Image (cartoon, rainbow over all chains, first blue to last red; front, side, top):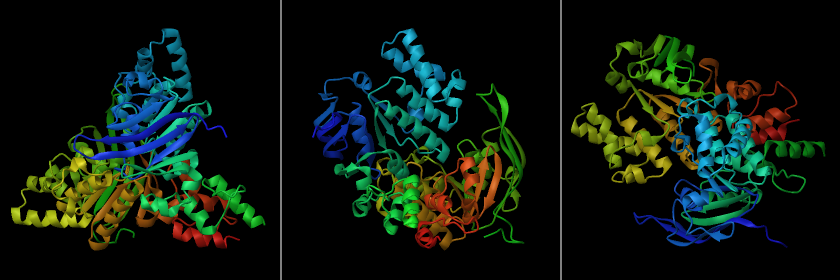
Length: 278
Length: 290
């Protein structure tokens, strides 16, 4: 078997904050190129600390972080940002330009792209995120959902290999969540690796293929999302509740054709109808 | 629970309009709330749902007088708290009746210890020292943070911070408590903690609760009534069962629906069959669906 190429790897990563708190205690994870990965765990489990290591905002107390096979210890945050883009939970922590257009151009300028290239990228991203009507708006006056889109778009414009999203659906209504996640999945289908830090278990079930579960600064489990979501005892250990559809299919003992657990509405409906038909 | 006949409602809103000069629209007045009529009885737990930008937070701010006292803008119609117009209250007096817990507890917490945080508002209200002590202890016990008393709020988890923010409001003992998206960013257990505290509040006291939330699955379990705001207009109002049964309308509004309700709606054979809105109802529902 050929192992898939890993785009992110941490080796025995340890992080102790100045306060003495150990936030990560020897975490080794690997994210395959092109995968969609959920990083889950309770508040305080080390998710954000781990994510910050992957973009060089924090540096290991011990252990190693590799991006594209290279140790990033000697790389600057700016260098790392060409490979890994990070979208903050709160768009206001990220947005600072006086127009949407400037916001989208900023990262591209730092990458040294010429004007023509920048225009191409920006036109593409405006279209993709349906932001054409807002180019001249100051981001600060846009609604929360739109600000979230602008912050995601400005990172995507730089086309990083890996996109890390911190709680992308928090504070969004259902329709905006679905819209945003569909855009993210479109990027994934074009080859971007996606890592989502989230508590939204519907997002985990519907959009991610793999999951990493952290608990108390350690990796509790990792593997295909569909396998992990079936392990209720493991989940309750981290205080995570699976989405209702998973509890329901499990109580009713419904299975997909491939014997997996239905995790989305569509899968549930198919499994339910086929049981009724038989 | 419908508002009781005869008893003064906790909140009575009549024809509430609010417009604010929008920077995005070149300082033109933008109508944020459009003719809201709403009555909320004492002891009721009402959830406000609606897409982002519908005016939910604005409505909350109008209830404790921050709008228009502190924000300016053009307000029309009336908001009465226990029969008295908010325009006639001083903000400080209104704060004794209506407490708000904001979406992001960080915007609210600022002291060096949990205890100070809970004490702060009481000091502002010039509450006597001995009574203050009782209230602080009681409020912390209520939300289950007694053991965090001496800790710094900054080093707590998201769910703990949110409970500190709730305790700080509880200590002021307002009859009406407003929570604006109190669970956003909390893990599932933190979310349940918040709902548990709120549920306990109403079962053990006569507090009136108003909560802005997207968490339809928890709302379905705990709320007495749900209202839906869209573009500044109150478009739907009813019990969680009535509201969540209107699957198509909610989808059009972009409002979240309990997943079990969505699933049942997709497979039910008869439009007359009531839909489950919580998991415990759903399991027998699906087993018996002909």
